[in-house]
Amino acid sequence: MSQSTTLEAPALKPKDYASDQEVRWCPGCGDYAILKAVQKTLADIGAKPENTAFISGIGCAARFPYYLSTYGFHTIHGRAAALATGAKLANPDLDVWVVSGDGDSLSIGGNHLLHLLRRNVDVQYLMFNNRIYGLTKGQYSPTSPAGTRSPSSPSGSLEAPIHALSWALGCGARFVARGADVQQKELVETLKRAHDHRGTSFVEILQNCIVYNDGAFANILDKGAAQTAQIHVQHGEPLRFGPGGGRGLRLRPGKLALEAVTLGENGITEADILRHDETDQMLATLLARMEGPDLPVAFGVLYCDPAATYERQVRDAMTEARQRQKPLQEALYEGYTWEVA
Image 1 (cartoon, rainbow, N blue to C red):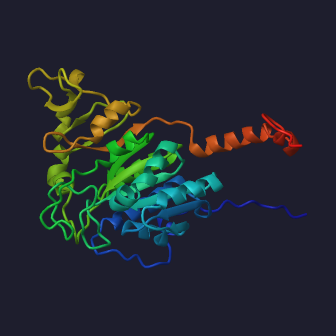
Image 2: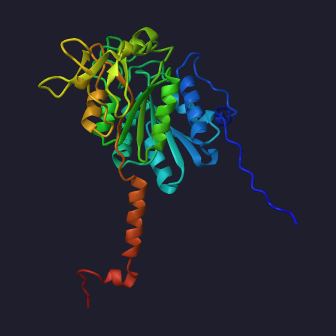
């Protein structure tokens, strides 16, 4: 009598999530590093390719679905959030990731992204921010600093840039985080936290465009600047940075604002340094707005406060509606009716 044996499929490695398509970004583009981090994340969480979908809009980042051996949908400009919402509502068990750039997300796609965030659809939204339109040859984007000279702003852009994370918080996002293409270890951990979160996880990833905006984040990400220009936040830990953790953040006396202080100067001790609370939306907003030269740029999970997901609420509403459903004849005669002789 033969016995049946159930064999477990071997764990997939990062390379197993790579498709057979040639990766075609400019040599040196930060997207290569982000692709590597995403593949490592998928392997670490044991993602099933047949239950995973990557949805993108238009732009350099939007080529992502071609390079992963999962389901994918390369949509039209700015509409990735809307398509992802539909996919998740149609199949709530599908693991949906959205990949988009700063222009695709915050310009033509801003309205769709706003509603994705406020509805809290359970997807991971990765916004690559290189502060420029790369695919269409270097026009200034919604995140470009004022004064940016580009083919579409030869005299310098006039608009104030959108700060993506504080904007997302204002839209009602329940999870916001920031990573960078050159921070492989930290980025993978941030992406895994985003995946663990139930609801919309919004992750801004600083990314270098070597052709049209090279060095846009050099003052933050270069090795010589990293210690003083970055702060990596951890829930419950003091907000310290700098060489040896010798600097920290505290609330400016008499104001609802952060300031950087040096431990040991003017009687400053660790007791004066704030601890990160990722459930505190106000603190997350203050951290999201930080930028040099006086304050470091915050990386990691700035805010995480789960709430009911949109697809769960839709499903519950449909169930309730079915329970209240009446026969058609009864429904037709309900309320005010008239008989015409």
